[in-house]
Image 1 (cartoon, helix red, strand yellow):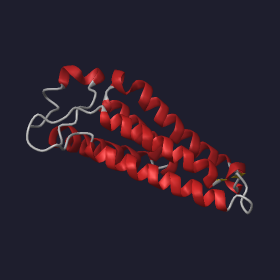
Image 2 (cartoon, helix red, strand yellow; image 1 turned 135 degrees about the vertical axis):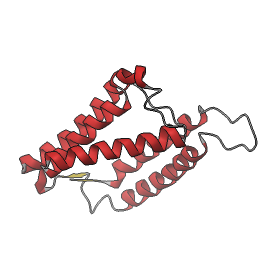
Image 3 (cartoon, one colour; image 1 turned 90 degrees about the vertical axis):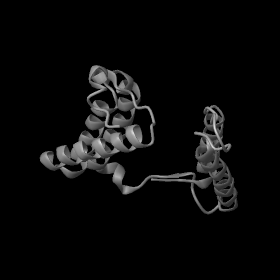
Image 4 (cartoon, one colour; image 1 turned 120 degrees about the vertical axis):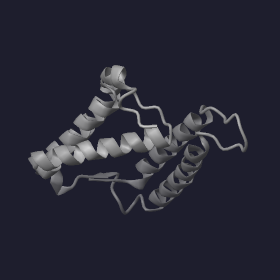
Length: 163
């Protein structure tokens, strides 16, 4: 499927604006320089806005030669439709249930389901999902000190934190 740059440009600009707004709401640091949690998201938002404007401009110039929406041959493939459904479903599942289940459980289930759909290897998907969630959890929560939701594992937070 190909979506015209005339449509994608404004969408990318909107995502950049949302990133800038979210970055402006991040807490400012109490110490030292002015770099806080919103510094890099603000840069990403600015880049997205510029890229979206460029996309829309080039799409507008080529609007006569390209259709607004062109469907690919994959839309007739049940496996490709299932792949897209699993990815979208996993995102919705994580957004809705990550606070209740917690990052470790929800992230593992989403990663495992996605890997299983794409690889069809249950044991390999289980191992990779477990290792990936462990690495992300340690990297973000223990080293970068980014709070991840504990959910159902809240009572084990002290045991599962390595600092």
